[in-house]
Image (tube, rainbow, N blue to C red; front, side):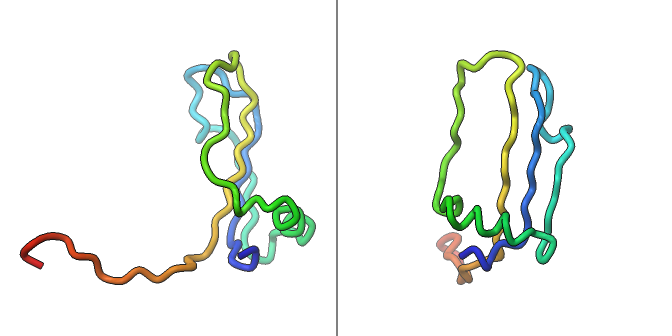
Length: 87
C-alpha cells in the first residue's frame, strides 16, 4: 500500500480558538518528491493502518496542531450503485 502514496500534506503550529487549520502553512510532498526516509518511516510505523481521529477535547488554548495527511491513489474501482426504484 505504501506504493500507492501519492501526496503528503503536513501542517504544524499553535492553533488558538477561532483559528482555522486551513490558514496554517502547509508542507506538501508529491510523488517522487516524497523522501525515501519518509516512506520507510510510514511503512515501519504502519501509519496507513491507523484510522480515526486522535484528540483531547479538553485540551487548553492554544493547542499544538500538527496533522499529517497521506493521500493514496484509488485502490478500489467502484461499480454503478442503485439509486432508487426508477433506475
